Length: 301
Image (spheres, rainbow, N blue to C red):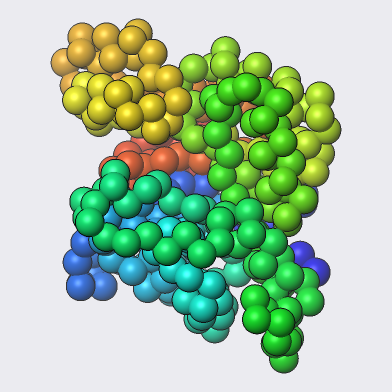
């Protein structure tokens, strides 16, 4: 059974999906999350809640629950870095009881890259195994320990994919494994190099994988030259072209220019065969999402 979510309905109807990222604020105040919820346009099909991507932040589960209460459909990210399979199963069941019906399965960046490098990583299972486990819980109600739920979760399962990893053959093998494990949608890393992304999409279509799961391409509005250089050095989102950095450096308002660059890329990505939607990575600048949507003509902001 397909989860009854706005995102699932968009994908099943063949309508381009529109999603955005929310980074839970490092606070104990629910009002901060409600303020973020108000910043997201109602035209979004879902808001993807990040799970401690760079170190401790607010609870992704709590943030997702508040977003749902504020009429913003959440997709809960769950990373395997910080939880063993006992905690993962508990988190999923807890989310389901709060009405969360969409999940994004991630392994997570190594803890040495975050604000608490001394933290121990769990890595009990990886994102592919988590995807497979969630799919079983969704379809048949079978949990990680083999026990059966009273009823299946009927949730929507997603995963992440990196268009710039090479060699291409290994990239496609990894993508196929996630789809076979049960991923119904794949969010890409932020796209800055359209030519390399298009090359990857050509390979995805040649393998027929665009027909097996929905590829949702991501854009990221860069807020500063410093942030662009940091991402370029880390290689987190693949190549950040020098031309992008030069354009940000030349602009009188780098943040405004970053939004324009993201909007221009979103327009181009919409035309790439096989792309089923656009995901806006906020990078913690959630209030930029509506402007990207407006400038890209994605929907009414």
